[in-house]
Image (cartoon, rainbow, N blue to C red; front, side):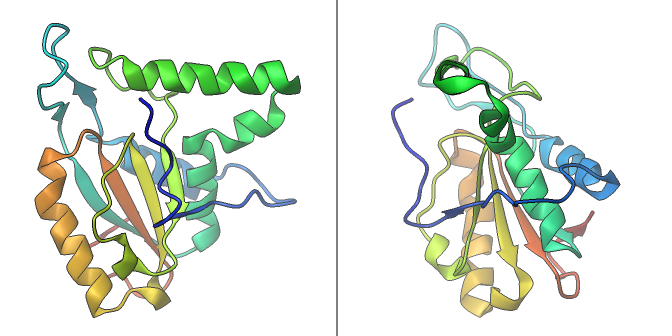
Length: 181
């Protein structure tokens, strides 16, 4: 509950000045990210138990990085916080996210906040452990052999993670290990 966004490995997704917040491609990506990310529950009497996650780690591909960034902003609630009226509204949204994080017995809801960030150097993700369901955006041009190796390590480690992680490779050809969206 008291862990923070991993800013050592991820950069927050920047809010764009203009442009659409949602489109058909964004809706498809959101659905793909949420697929199998839950229920992420533990029994009420065993908060230390491993959570039940259907698909803890997945790599997806989109042609347009803007789609991946929009999905990140929708999942992490950045636009909701930006639209909130006053400090009290923003504080309420953040408080709800913290309460949802602390409720280990409660299934992951579509409205729950995720972490979302951009990995400028995918190899630097080594050692990453999610605090909440996470969307990581990687530009295909930056995905080198070391980054692919880290993603392979994620696939092995994900079964022990407390939340699901989705990596979205944006641009370039579809990597053989990614599912096109």
